[in-house]
Amino acid sequence: MNRSLIAAVVVAALAAPSLASEGIPGATVRSESGKAAGDRKARFEQWCKENPEQCREAKAKAQQRREECKANPEKCRAEAQKQQEERFKRADANKDGRLTREEARKGMPVVSRNFDQIDANKDGVVTKEEIDAARKSRAGAAKGKGN
Picture 1 (cartoon, rainbow, N blue to C red):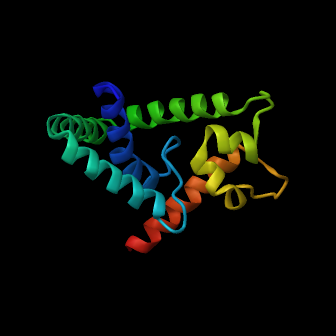
Picture 2: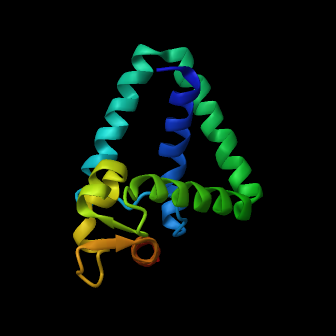
Picture 3: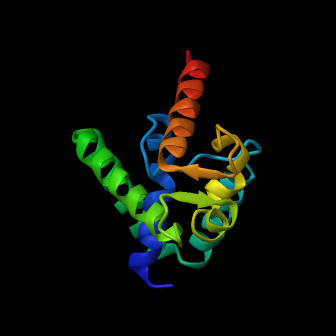
């Protein structure tokens, strides 16, 4: 993997939990078990052991990104929204504005893992609106736990 790709993955992984807690589109909806986050963290720690210099650079970039988002949260929200829309468009193979379970599996694996919870009307497809609603619901639940 090249450095910029790794840095982008690390930035996304580190920024996503804070963004998800605010209901930011583009932030991932985590699985109920939390396995994905734990697996991702373990893989990152292993990568850091194998690539200490790149790890330090990636962590520094992630910290810089967090500071930028604190200074200008609206800009970060807009960027995350744009990324989410692009990700959805790429995953929507037939361009009908809805993701089937298979499209989600191929293009948005986190949505795929949580498909049944996101598909609010149980019609077998998820829309951008359903994904956004699921994120907001999860963010609201997370904020409720913190109080």
